[in-house]
Image (cartoon, rainbow, N blue to C red; front, side, top):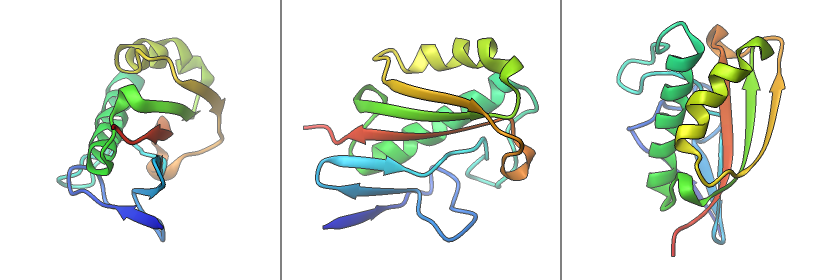
Length: 126
């Protein structure tokens, strides 16, 4: 059975998708961008501030699904500019200490012209 995850501690979906889906013991999050859940505004205009907000949003979605960052097995990271890679990694490495598998690519444009988006696959905590 597939379950849909929703929390008001992360931005609502801005399209026809859900924040995450659960099947068996796996959580698949939608890509999170650096929107503030309380008003939908973009958090900051630099890669560090935006990466932190994305991770906070991911933490809240994972918590609502019964998981957390330590149980993430794979992330896919999208950067508007690969020149931000080092600064992105500085913030990312503070929160993903379990070093999940990861892909990180530069893309032409992200929703709301943000600098970063991250999606994750995690295991539900036992």
